[in-house]
Length: 480
Ligand code: ADP
Image (cartoon, rainbow, N blue to C red; front, top):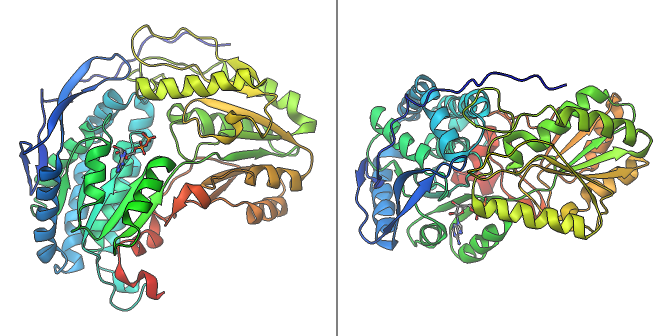
C-alpha cells in the first residue's frame, strides 16, 4: 500500500541564478567572442532559468590558450601545493553542498534526495581522494617521476553534471594538468557555480576553464590542435566521432560511453534484497545512468514470484516534483531524451514484448515517463539491445549459469553487471566470465572514488577513479 505523504519541498532560496552567463576563462567570467546564446530550462516545469553561452571557435581558442599558459606554472608547483587547492575546493563543495544539490535538481530534474545524498557527497569525496594523491604521484606505481600531460579537454554529459565534473577535474589537476571543461548543453548551471568555487578557492587563473555549448563547441574543443588529452563521457555515437577525429594525433583519449547492463538474479538469491537492487539499478536517476541495470536476467524457476515482488515494489515509487524530499523518480532531463525513450518503448510493444508501467499521475508540465517493465523480451528486441537511458527495464530469463553469462555478454556494450546469489563461488565464477568493467555482487550502483570505473567493447576505454584514474592523466601510463 502507498501512504500519502504531505508535500516536503526543499527551499530554493539558497540558490541564486543569474539571468545570463558568460564563459569562465582564465579565472574570470567573460563575454563570448563569436558565440551565441540559448536558454536553459528546468525539465520538471519547463521554466526558463537563464541564458547560456554557446561558445564559438574563438572562445574555445581563448580557453585553450588560458589553460596552456596556466599549465607552465601549475605543472611545476609541488604536489603538496596542488593538493592544498584541491582540499580547499573539496571543503567549499561540502560547505555549499545544499546549494549545489538544489541547483542540480532544478537544472537536471533528478530527485533532491539523490543530488543531496548521493551526487554531492561523492563529488566532495572525489576531490578529497585526488587531493591526497597530488603529493604522492611517484608512489602510485606509475613510474618514478610521472609527468603530467598538459591541457585536457573534458566533455561531460547531463545525467550527473557535478559528479562527472569531479571525475574529470580532480584527477587532472592532481596530476598537474590544466583543463577546459564543457558541461552538457541541458545542464550547465552547476558547472558555472563550480567556476565560482574555483575563484573562492583562489585557484590560479586558467587552471580550470569552463565553456558552455553543445556538440559544435565540443567538437571545436576536441579538434583544437593545442590540447594533449581528451576525456569524454557520453554516447557511443559521439565517442566514435571523437575517437576518429583524434586518431593520428598525439592526443590521449579516455572514453566512457553507453551500457546495457545485465542484472542477474539466481534462484537462491535473497529475493527482497534483489528486488531493491533491481529497482535501484534501473530507476535511480530515472535510469539516466550509463551503468544502469537495464536488463534483468532472472532464473526461470523464480520468475513469477520475483516479478510479483518487483511490481509490488515499483508500485510504491513516488514520481513527481524533484525538489520534494519524498520523490523517488524525478523528471526526464529533456524533451529530446523523452522522445527517445518513447520511441524505444513503442518499438518494444511493436516487437511483441509486454509492457507494464507504474500507475501514477504525470505532472502536466515538464518531461515525465512512468517507470516501466517489459516482459516476454527476446534478445533480438531493440529494448534488449539498445541503451534506452530511461526508467525502462527489460526482463529476460535463463535456466543455467552458463546461459545467464552468455545472455549477459550478448551485447555490444560492457560497462557494468550485477549478480544476485547467496553462493560465493557462483559470484566469483560468473563475475570472472562477464565482459563488464564493473561487476557488483548483491548490490548495485555503488560508487567510490577509490574504485576504478570504465568499460569494455562499445562502452569505451580507459578507467576513471582511484589510482588507475591518475594514470590516464600522466605520461608514464604507456611505460607500465
Ligand atoms: P547524451 O546521449 O548523454 O546526451 P552526447 O554524447 O550527445 O550524450 O553528449 C555528451 C556530451 O558530448 C555533451 O556535453 C555534448 O554537448 C557533447 N557533444 C555532442 N556532440 C559532440 C561532438 N561532435 N564532439 C564533441 N562533443 C560533443
